Amino acid sequence: MVYQEVKRVLRLQASLVGLAVVVSLLLSGGNVAVAVSAVLGGLAVLGPALVYARIAYAKRHVPPAALIKAHFLAEAVKFCLTVLISAAVLASFKDLSVAGFLGGFIAATSGYGFGLLIKN
Image (tube, rainbow, N blue to C red; front, side, top):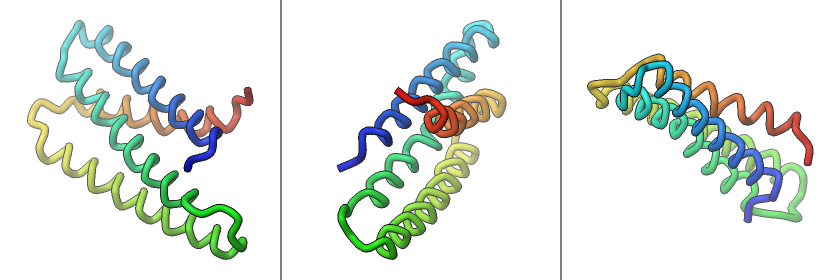
């Protein structure tokens, strides 16, 4: 099970990706390819972040060394997934807007930092 704080950060990341999609639609004059690019950029962060949470928080009440090992493994998997997803999107999506993709990617990534700063 994933902690409530992790769920809150993931929801914030998803909300910021939604905001990036709306902004990309407004700035591009309604170009759907830009909005799809922003969604794909956000998913390139959100998917691996969810996998990280599942791996890192799979076990509770274990020795600190086991927790650190789980977080290192989760970070390695997250990094590899982020690179693979981004490469797959860049290679396969013909109408990709790099600005839209990076906008969604940055929005989702910034959600992590904002999530740590904002306390409920």
